[in-house]
Amino acid sequence: MVPSINQPVTVSVTPQDPQGVVSCELWWSVNSGAFSHATMTAKGDGRYEGTIPAAAAGKIVQFYVKATDSLGATAAFPAAGPDSGALYMVADGQAQPTLGHNFRLIFTPANWALLRAVTNLMSNATLPCTLIYNEQRPYYDIRALLKGSQSGRPADPRPSFNVKFQPDDRFRGVHPVLLMDCSGPPGTANHQQEILAHHMLLHAGGIPGMQPDLGWLIPPFQTNTGPAFVIPRHEDEFIETAFDNGGDGAEWSFELIYTPTTTNSAGYKLPNPQILLGVDLQDLGDLLCFHQ
Image 1 (cartoon, rainbow, N blue to C red):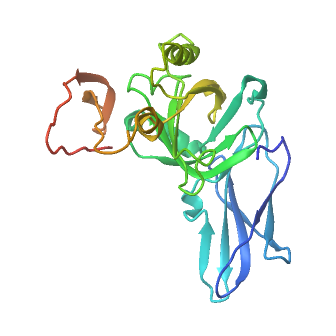
Image 2 (image 1 turned 180 degrees about the vertical axis):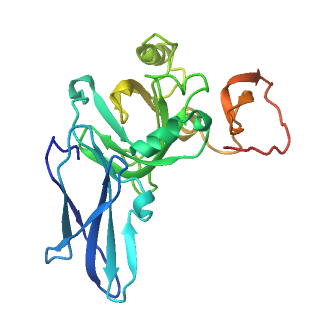
Image 3 (image 1 turned 45 degrees about the horizontal axis):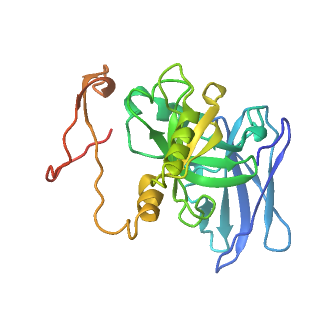
């Protein structure tokens, strides 16, 4: 799942179609470059194989397969083809297996730049990606967005992520969403204090709390690699497990209101500076939310 330097990669699929599959093509792109493709070889048991050429350390490869049936109809997997998120990254020496669980989160360079663009930092839109867990288990064609405040999202090396898994392939078969939090006061490494707070809650008489863990997060570029606080979403685990029938009924989200006060030359809002308004928990009526 994380090939060595200059190691070719074999991709295999087992396509099915009522009219019969007559051919398969393997498509790939290196570091958001133009796509190349090659005909895959039928292996006799319904399986097709193709090979992606070797690449240098740290290169990010996106790939998908396109199949054609006897009537000429085609389909891709993942379904979005060139806009999907099946990726791998050539080994770059960033993994730290002795430090605990490793999470290699892979975006194409183009989508990574889009995710980090100053006018897009606060967007709730997700982008396609792949998560490689412990350098062995892939979660292909998932979606992710940045998480955290508008103050933390622009600052390296502390990007945090909200990662959404495919409904038929949840993380460890359980979690539909995983939060990877690298945030903390600038200039400090405070991820461990979150774990300390968790243990304090447990030893203070079983006060309900989340079940966090520490992991080693490897986003696409080395400036962002480091420890992360890994945790399910509050609504996916905490409410339901801490209280009997805790997930029943309405759930309310308490938010601060951020109003950006500046734009760039094209008129797009910039996340900072902003007016920050805190209000008590109350019904504000029907609101319209706009996201760039």
